[in-house]
Structures are given as C-alpha cells and as structure tokens.
Image (cartoon, rainbow, N blue to C red; front, side, top):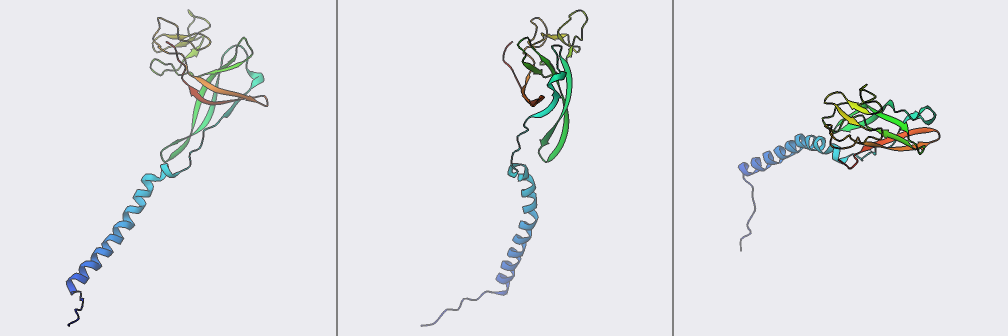
Length: 169
C-alpha cells in the first residue's frame, strides 16, 4: 500500500496566505466602524433625573418663567440645553410647572401676553390661549393642554424632571 502525501501547491499556498491576510486586514478596518456605529447602544443609559430650578420661596401664585439647563445626549453628541418652565403655586399651595411650548405649532407661550385676555397663557403665533392651569381654551388653535413637568420639592428647592403630555382636548 502506498501512503498518499498531502501536498499544497505553490498556488494554493499563496491563495490561502492572501485570503488570510486580506481577511485580517478587512477585520482591522471594519471593527472600528462597527464599534462606532454600535457605541450609543453599548453605553449605559443615564436617567436625566431631576434638575434644580428655583428656590420654592421665590414662587408666588403668579406664573413665573424660569430657565434651567439639562444635559442631553443625541447619539454620540452630548450637550447642555436650556429649557424653560412656567412655575406657580396653585390655590392648594401645590407647585405647578408647565412647559412654555404651545401644542399647536410649537411656539412659545407667554403669561398675560395678550392685554385683551388677561390671566391666560397666550401664543402670539396664531392666537392660541390656555388657562392658568395650562388647559387649552376652546375655539383657539391648540388641541391639547400644555405639558406639565414632573416636579419635586426637596430642602426648599424645586426640582423639575421630564415634561409629560396631559390628555384632553
């Protein structure tokens, strides 16, 4: 019986070698691209949490516009954004924080912004109006109430969280 020797020709050796080197180089090039594409998914999610906005003693029954900064993450880009809230104390001594963004087309509402309609939030873009508690006035363009911020009072400071949509029409 003859033993068969397994031999690799020069052509097969070069083919296998080039394929191995080419595969190694392709992996070296594509791995960082795949990592960069998946990076936002691999990062741990950070809860925006509550942000200190104002001392509770400064708030009255008249809505006051307060600006505050939040950290936001947009894919790979992290930044600090300025947001606003209309904050006041209601008749039950509860603090209320409303978003200033009109639910019609996203303009900014103002408290007592229209002299003909006192004690209302007014959107100057299309004449939208909201009552003091943020409920949209029927017959005006907005179809929903102003969003309301999550609110917490701790050690005399008002903290705001995310703005939540409220039901209604």
